[in-house]
Every structure is written in structure tokens, then in C-alpha cells.
Image (cartoon, rainbow, N blue to C red):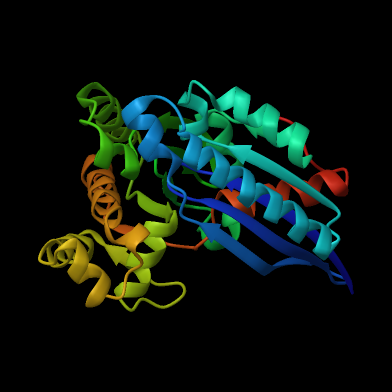
Length: 300
């Protein structure tokens, strides 16, 4: 048995994360086990989606966080890492300047990935073990700045698309109706060509909803259950969602727009259920790093 530690940094619109994960090589298989996850609710998207740039205060916080992440990766003696940034950094006018500072001052190479690259990495989380190879699925990852969608039929990836619809974006700016219509059209197109579509949800909000609903591993959420939870959450003020439901402040506001996005996905795709494997971008990065280490990664 061999333990191989890898690191994944995800600079998202709502939070930034460092995942340390071991690839554990057994004689007949390899499994992945989370060692540490450090999440900081920096919410870069609140700056970018309202003012097009990351403020000096949050820039400093980001640099401090990345310095800490660098030390933690060194302490775990990781084999390799990858650091990626998504919507907020993509759209920030000072995004490239921050990337340069992080490289020069901290020594972390940070790359901005586009929506389709993000969807590709998310799909690389090994979800094939959770799905029926004879059925049709739409993988929906709802983030702070964007929603990534991957269509899977009979265990084959058909399409990937990214939409500028996200939880922090919805809280900080008026919704782009054209983008919502594009999302609706894409999902309805899948409903016309596929049968009995199941959704696969990822992101911190659907994970939290799954937990709030008392679901167990392997169970699904149906559309009526999710609508009931949405109505239930709306009864509480922001402060009450923190005090009564024990949500963290950085979750108590974004959970409502996230639920709304998933409800739209249900409706537009005419789906009846959503599975929640509780895997995301960071997990996909580690899987790719291991494939690269073993010489198995095929570039797409």
C-alpha cells in the first residue's frame, strides 16, 4: 500500500479552498481519501460582480491565504499541486496582476480556467462509479459566479457548457435574462433528446441542502422535496438561518439562489431526481494530478 499526497487550490467566486488528498494505491485499486480541506469564505465575486475589480483589502487577504496554503502544502510534502481560479478572477480587471504577485511573492503558479475547462475538471471526479451506465444524466455544478453543466448519456459525455449564473452573482447584480434563457434552452434541448434524466449536483450549497434534508449516502432528492426546502428556507431571515438552522454566514445567503438554480434545472430538464456525490472541482484536480503522475492523463 502506497500513500501519495496531492494538493488542489480552487480560487472561487464565493470561497477559496485548499484540498490535501491522498491517492492510496492498493494492489488491485487506487482510492482517494481527503486529508485536509481549508476553506476561506473570501467572496471575491462580491467585489468583481459589482465593481469589476478585486479590492485592495481582499487582494491582501488572498495573498495571506495563499501564503498559508503554500506552507501547508510544504508541511504535507505533497507530490504535486494545481491552483486554478474561476469566474471572479476571470472577470476581474486586476486578475492578471494578482496572479503575477502570487507567483512572484509566494511561488504558487495560479492559472485562470474557462468555464468549459472547469466543467471538464469537475466531470473528472470519478462520478462514473455513482451512475448507471444505461441511463442519462446532467451534471450541474453551481458556483458563486457560474454554473457548469455536463451531459452524460449511457456513460458517454455528450456536451459541456458554462453559464454565467451563480449564487454570488445573483446576490450582487441583476440577473442576466439572456443567460437564463440560454440555460433554459440548453436544458430543454437535453430533455427533448434524452429520457428520464437524473441530475447530479455538486457545490457546497447542494451538499448542505442534502445534509439539511437528512439524506443518506446514495439517496436522491426529488423536485418536490427541494421545492419544499426552498419554501422552508425562505421563511427565515438571514440571521435566523444562522441562529436556528446553524448555517455559517457565508452559506446563509447563497443557499437560496443556489436552490433556485437547481429548481430551474429540474424544471427545464424535466427531471425527477438529483444525486449528490459530494465531489467537486478540487476532487477533480486531484484525480487529474494522479493521472498525470501515473502518465495516464489525456489532454482534452
